[in-house]
Image (cartoon, rainbow, N blue to C red):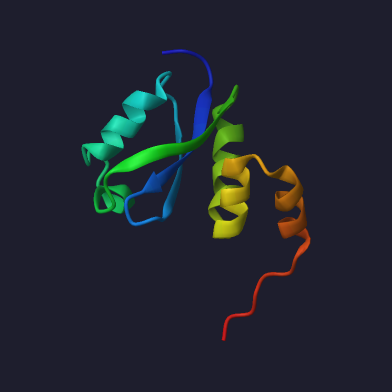
Length: 101
């Protein structure tokens, strides 16, 4: 096993996104594990999944901190990140959250 950790976003069959981290060197293996239902939980009922975005971190603590941050983001912010639209991501970060009625 190599150094560091991956942060990743999976696109699920129902159109939702799953955010996670992995210490595996090979993200294809991690995606396969999700598709085999090995983790149960969220992705097991939303298969197949595909890798939408990933970034490598040298330290697991940094990857986990980023995962916690992105999990709280809106769908629009996650999609801007996936597309690499950092200008829109910056604009969305400045907007107040929509009110729940």
